[in-house]
Length: 236
Image 1: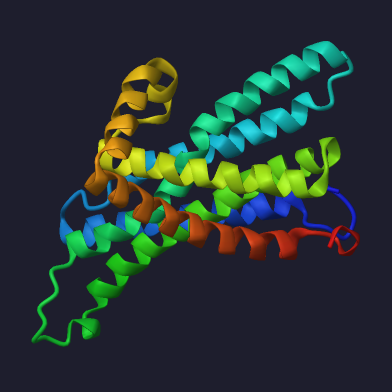
Image 2: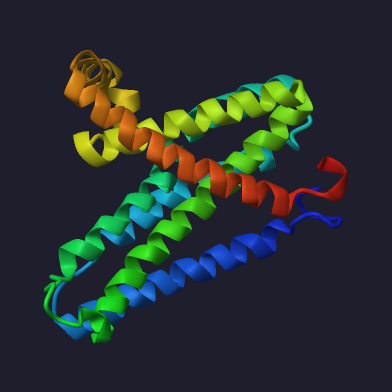
């Protein structure tokens, strides 16, 4: 169960993720204060967007308790579709690792690893990436549990893998085309046109597939570990 039993305790997990978020923000504040710059200022917004699918997940869980079956199904369906569009925002944090190389200029001839600022910058990027993987896994876990109640176990796993693949492609679209989740709802044809251009050009297609498969592989491995850790013994 989500709230009771020997499975994972959702409030405790959310509390840890919230603490991790505050820790990430604390690193940003310290780096900005020490450097006198607005280093990593964009992470505040990116991390907030990463929490949006989690907020929607909590709304869906609350809607599942509605007594009116028809209203419950309609509202849960709409909320679920919106969550799918925002899910890549959480996984997108994985790509924040690149900023460690933007903000710290490494000199090959220097022992840069002795510089504390190098580790602070690296750990800030790493904390955001780790947070993104955890938030993504939490949302996918909730979707997985709902699917297991509605369909065959193997079909549920197949849908989850497809979902993670689409989220990985969504990360590519966000990182390289700079489209946002709400653009997918407001400008779907424009985004589909961009995707078609990438698929039709060999070089762009290779770049899309290579990046997406890499993100997908990392996410699947992390989710499988989370699934095993969070599942009750009878579910394994």
